[in-house]
Length: 91
Image 1: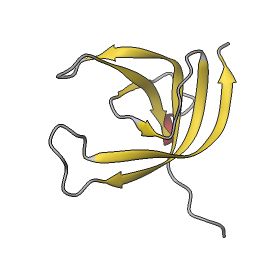
Image 2 (image 1 turned 135 degrees about the vertical axis):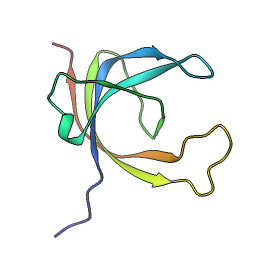
Image 3 (image 1 turned 90 degrees about the horizontal axis):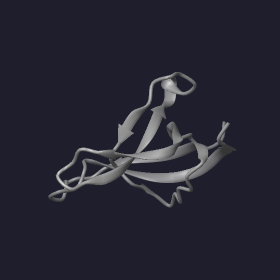
Image 4 (image 1 turned 90 degrees about the vertical axis):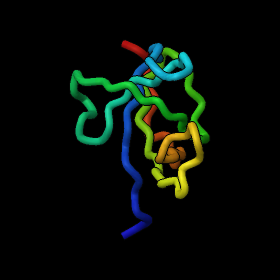
């Protein structure tokens, strides 16, 4: 049956400023079932092992692990790149 697959997310070709305690650039993402829709949501976290290049749309398989305990000023979940499934140039 092979190894278990992690969740899939699509990352849009540009980042966007997002409201946070510290001004930062966020990815625009479509998680799992939303891939291919018109709905993009702000993604505040980093994806360990992922190098974002503007102008490409990425389909990624990631692993999500819960931090326990959660360090101060750090989000509850840690995202790590398993595999870049697809990278396509902006249309």
